[in-house]
Structure formats: C-alpha cells, structure tokens
Image (cartoon, rainbow, N blue to C red; front, top):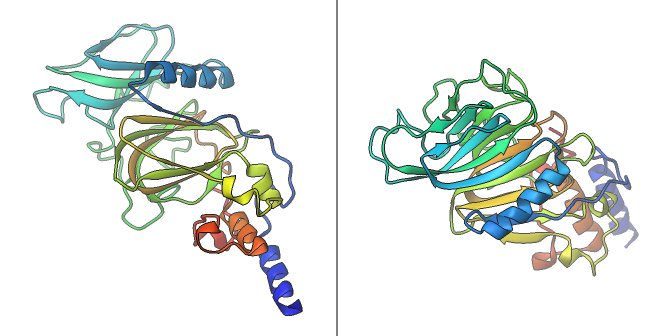
Length: 309
C-alpha cells in the first residue's frame, strides 16, 4: 500500500507544472453559448454576451443575402453557406472564405444566388495590405499547417488571419481565424487575463463530432476535484453544421469526432495563451482512482507534460 501511494505521489508531481501552476487561482469562465445560427433569439443572447465582454466589437448574422450595406466599422465576414449560385467557384466566394469589408464600403455578391454570412465588426481599421477576399482552399499562399487543435500529420488546418507573419501571409491582431478539421484536439483554455475569446463556426460535422467543455479550470489546475464533483466537471455537446459556439476566456474546451470548423479568436491568437490541462485531468484520475466510464476524458499525448502554445 505504501509503495502504491508513493507511486501515485510521483505521478502527481510529474503532472504538476502547468502555466498557472498547481493550486493557482484563476478567474472563473463566463457562460458558454452554443446556438443554431437560424435561432434569432439565441443568437441575440450570444451577441449580447460577446459585445459586453469585448468593447468595440460587434457581431451580426446575415442569412440569404446578396449584399452588405456600408457600416461605420471595418468587418471580417465569414461565408457560412451558398444558395443557388451558378458559376465558377474560383471567381465568387464559397463556404470557408472570408470577406474583408472596410468601413463605408458595401459588398455585392457577383453572379446569381445568395449567401449566409457571419460578420464581426472590429474596433480598428483593417491593414491596407489585406486583400478583399481570403480563400483557404484557393489561395496558394495558404497551405495545411498542422498544430493547435489538429496536430496530426496531414491535418487540414489552414490559417486565414494570423497574429504572426511567420505563420501565415495575412496578419491581423484584432481577430484571427483558421479553418480546421478537428478529430481529437487537446484539452486547453485561454486565460481570462491576457487571453482571448474563441468561436467555433461549424461548417461540416460527422455523426460523432462533439465538444467537451468546462468552466471549472481553477479546480482542474488546483486538482481540488472530489469523486462526487468529477462527473459534473466536464460537459459534452454534439457539434452540428450551422452551429456557432462562443467560448469565453477561461473556458476549457476540446473538439472530437470530426468537425470542419472556422476557429475564430478575439482579439487575435496571442502566443503562449493556449494552456493545456490534460496533465491535470490525468492526475485527477490517478488521485481519485477513476477508471472506465468514471474517468475524466483526456488527450493521451498532451497529458505527458504541461502544454503551453
């Protein structure tokens, strides 16, 4: 028995050492919002929560439109769906593309059809060097870059707007985005202080696609979870095409099961603000002796050490 306890203590010591440290105090995450974009009332509540937490930004959903009227702020606009369009997809926006619309300018869809658009108003002007249209599947400057939520070799992960020029050709600090197929990401969060909010704009999803979340990061990092608390520590929800998930700073999240997602961060993806917790989840399992269905889910590779990106 003493030998087993010693081994358990050693495992806990190895797993300790995340960015916040064992027992560190962190601010609690706000509520997670997950909505179908077609649900106007739910979208309005998500938008209100986002705007309250991010002064200077705004968010709007435009379904079945052919144009955007001029606005007072620059906008980053995500193409979510295309309806009844005829013509060459190389000459008109398609699902996954991003429009960059400057303040005072309108936008019109070339050719026939209509589109669904998710528009972020940003608090400062877009850099002049950014193009009007960013196309992850057609731009030769944008290629697969495994990392983040998709580290496996050959992963589909294309960086549209980035924080650092060495990562991608189009740099923007008020908002970043990458389009990625998430099969098995590591469990992580972005800190309330110095981090960023994140959105999952789901564009395709397999039948097993799901998202794990927790607002109890302080308890996870301090490892103060009891056997009674463990079952409610992490929530699971399916991911479906046409869904928008708002993950405020401080929210742990992990995608699984095959979903094609625009991952959008506000402000941009600040380096060293992606903090893994799988080593903590693994250590809690060991400390509580959780096995089988009672075991907290964790990413096996990421649990080997503290991960900060």
